[in-house]
Amino acid sequence: MTTDDVAAVIATNDAFYAAFEAGDLRSLLALWEQNDDVFCTHPGWPALHGWEAVRASWERIGMGPGTQQFILTDTRVRISGDLAWVTLDENLLGHRASTVTSVNVYRRQPDGRWLMVAHHGSPVMATFDH
Amino acid sequence: MTTDDVAAVIATNDAFYAAFEAGDLRSLLALWEQNDDVFCTHPGWPALHGWEAVRASWERIGMGPGTQQFILTDTRVRISGDLAWVTLDENLLGHRASTVTSVNVYRRQPDGRWLMVAHHGSPVMATFDH
Image (cartoon, rainbow over all chains, first blue to last red; front, side):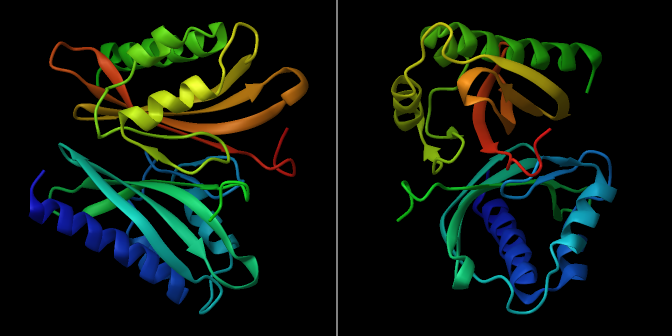
């Protein structure tokens, strides 16, 4: 795990949340592998498997500019071979203020890009919240 | 990803839940890598990082025989290099009946064993529950 690898993974992860905050569905979906390996668990949702279900979920979430704003904290990166997992807290602002703790898994592609293969976010109970 | 690899990962995952159900803390902890790479997110908890925090959390959960009973459903295995991730639903029985959707990440060791590097369980909201 080199410094360059970590920087590339963090850049991809930052791009994911930038697209999420901007409501840029096209950019967000382009950061995923688009195959049967992928899964996505939104906070409180059951796990969704395979590209069609994952894609549809992001459309259903109804992304639009300003609907989601985060302060990301405690971002940590681990890399093992061609797989990287990033853990972080998504501190949501606004009337739905809450903390979601997430793990994002990325896989290195033959061309060197990292693409998301898993996103699992879970709500942190208020008793633990800060 | 060979059939043998998948079988070995599933056997490790089964051992994890068998130890959990049996309240066998020693066996459960022995299935983890014991270093700073590990993280564990129990349902509703913030993410815990590093072996000391992860170990302490399992002690705090107060495992004992019969305190946790699961029916595991929808178990899926993905392997990429020396990393495997297993998704499944933990359907908890008893007075705390609920569904937790989890991802468990395992890493292949030099001796061929698979050890857990991440466990992330999140509560499925009742509106999605079945």
